[in-house]
Length: 377
Image 1 (cartoon, rainbow, N blue to C red):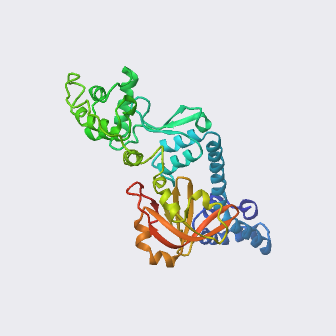
Image 2: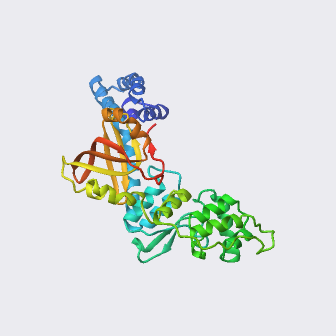
Image 3: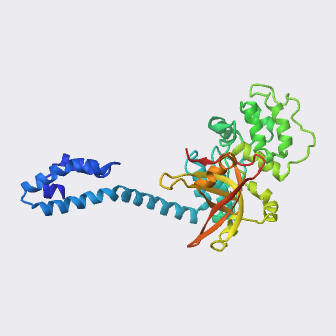
């Protein structure tokens, strides 16, 4: 329209295009208005028509930029939803391989996949690749399970994981912890982290026995004669409890593939009248509820008038919590310092979704089983 009505040159039209997509588009558009009106007059276009045309261009600048973004995001959402529905294991594994990224932590991504029936398996020294992969599993949604990768284990990283896998592919699977360190040069923290993550479970030793042997194995090197390291045969040690396994998983990889930390408090929460995230969706509008979970996000958008939005996660799903400026001020220390919260509030149920408007908050002790939340700055 600028070219036809006001004889804008290609360069001027490009300036107009840039002005329409700029953060302060109105100010930049006003600078081009005189050139537009002068060009329109030179072409015999009356003032009222020129103003009407320019106002339409100017109005589009107010939504054209977000409209283009919304179409791009809509395509991403549609494609992601399609992948997540039909290939949930592949979708989750792809996100795990792209870390660090995105709004949700690897623990939340895996917990969501598990809630949708995807089986997630711990890292394995003979089955894992450096990053998350798929394994055929009829019992898992979509027919595939996720196998966590070796590189995601604390103190291991990409280089060591790639070396472990390359040696295994070249010369066959490992039969013991000692054989691993005889074939691949690894530092003691990496071997102990592999043991903590359960990467040696398929070889026979429980995690405590593997940790015992890891220290001795760390003294061997590929250039040493095999079988000389003492202490590789661990004594009979008690196995880890489910709680201890979860703690070990979260320390080693930040992911608990078989459980969620809030599971260990479910009985305690139920006795105190707290509902789960899944049950929250069945609450009546206006009902006062208690809910507890791990804090995954704290967000305070600039347009929210000081309201802070919290996201709580438990073994059944996620819950949205709205915290007013007054409550945030009164309970600031608890709200910012606690990795898990027990919250009382009013349920706002609208079109199948539920938000809890908090009126009371308490810290929830998950004994260090919760990763750091992703918060506003």
